[in-house]
Length: 120
Length: 106
Image (cartoon, rainbow over all chains, first blue to last red; front, side, top):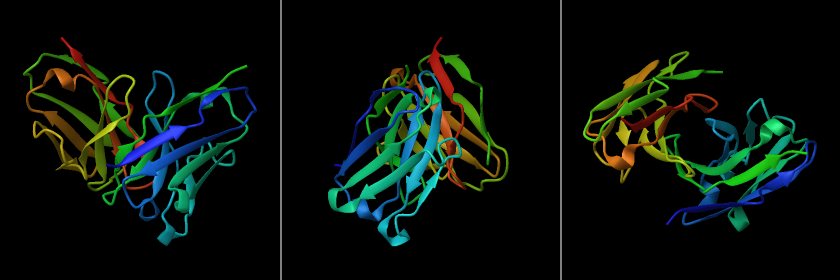
């Protein structure tokens, strides 16, 4: 059974940093591109970024709203995905989801989400 | 960036109704369009991929159609568990989601 479990969310002050983790199981993690998607309270879904699979050298891509502040990484030996968030702003407050990109370019599995609150 | 819009933003319907709602892309995305269902407090769930392919385990009352810029999600007979928000997402380029259509009980 495919499982994605996020952790690391919490309350942080504006300008602060936080690192989210996503533990994957039930599939060959290194084969898949992995993405982060977020959802601000009461709002829609926003794509945050992607790390590609091993074959694609783990290259990354980011939404304009987080580029230069957020860094996505992965450790295939630990089946883990990470999101390092620096220079956090109040508008980064959201539930952050870890997702698996399927071969049809859809997000077929999602974690339960972890809440990040940026507030003084 | 490709912009996604959805209409209506919300609709009220009854159990057993046939409901359809649309998603429009700002430029042609061929059939690179996916649909997700989200219930309050839960992660989104993939329903339809590549415009019209039903994800494994999703009831056959859900169907999708369209190509280019205009897409439709149809629920043939609305069930109590279908009251939720539905998002479209283009995978033609940098992923982008529509703002969602909320389906609630009339």
